[in-house]
Amino acid sequence: MSDTPDDPAASRYEHAPTGLRRTDLDPDPIKQFSNWFTAAIEAQIQDVNAMALATAGKDRKPSVRIVLLKGFDQDGFVFFTNYESEKGHQLAENAHAAFVFYWIEMDRQVRGSGPVEKTSRHESERYFHSRPRGSQLGAWASRQSQVIDGRRVLDARMAEVTERYGKEPVPLPPHWGGYRLKPQVMEFWQGRRNRLHDRFRYTQSHGKWTMDRLAP
Image (cartoon, rainbow, N blue to C red; front, side, top):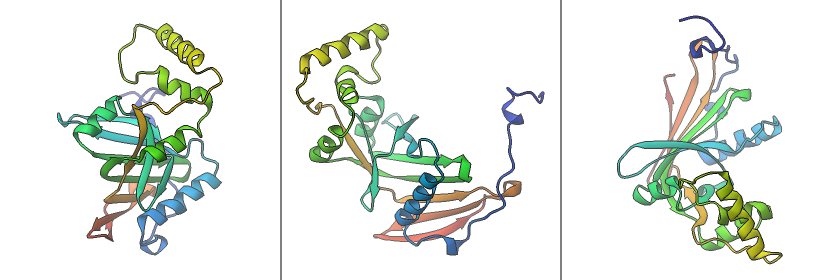
């Protein structure tokens, strides 16, 4: 295999020497995530809340895409989408998902998995009306994941809903809202030299978290 720029095997970099110790971590993975998330914001990482979300329906075939984290606390990690999208249908069939954040600038990765449930209608409405008006109209115009003939279809739908609502408030679509992923497993990864990375896994059982170090 040639060592050319378009050769995936040729793409590599040396990881940072700074490691991660058990004593560096909070016993609560949600608090630990908050610490790292804040550090990533302070490092001015672009799209710091972008997370890869993996779902699978009853056919057990995984599907993954990037979504934006819109909130997190002890109740879970929240994102919003069209309930009639591919991930919406998969979550209706299998209400379990996994996520990963990768902040390459800090040599850090966070993974998590657990059951998923819809947010309340009130919570979905509150976030929906905090979005730019164009994004609110777009939620009505786009039938996410459905096949369309061309861009003109989206443009026509956007023009139609823009005219329909005029200067009136845009209502929350019945097919749009939030999900909350409640992690039962979380892993914090810190890159190290020679691919001997530091990995710590938190596992929840009976409401309590335990932590284990994993081999890289």
